[in-house]
Image 1 (spheres, rainbow, N blue to C red):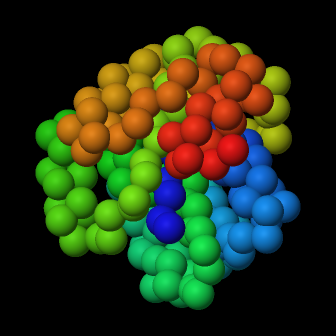
Image 2 (image 1 turned 135 degrees about the vertical axis):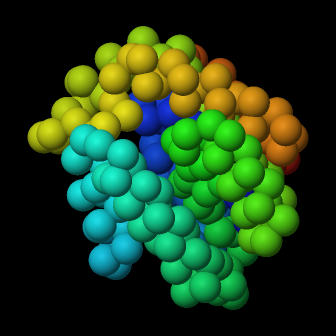
Length: 189
């Protein structure tokens, strides 16, 4: 089963994906977990580097390397013989692109790439996301890690998630409650 968990920076998507993967593994299921941008190949590493640089060129370079990183994961890991493949970030990365390119890219990649059986958008208010980002600060912030950018990306991300019939999950709740919501949606007890 192909599952995607997405949301704003600071929404808790990686935490929820790890929780889900651990839950499944404890029940004897095999899981491939991919977090984007990834740090096990140069495409993901470059995507992260460009996210810490300001400017239009860096914005497009980060989007390009992010896209290539996701494609790399699909080609290299997406077809493993596992029970569950869980991606953190997938199509909603297009919300970071300027309008109207965000919708064009979403439609293009939606038509081209494999569709997840279940896709979750973990939704949090931009201020909540920003406070979480500040608390976990691991050095320099990325170009979108400010409340103005987070507001804009949330609006676009929610619109794209609704367009793609993603399940929107309230990420402001306790992590254990968010986890239960995701597991219930997947019919996992």
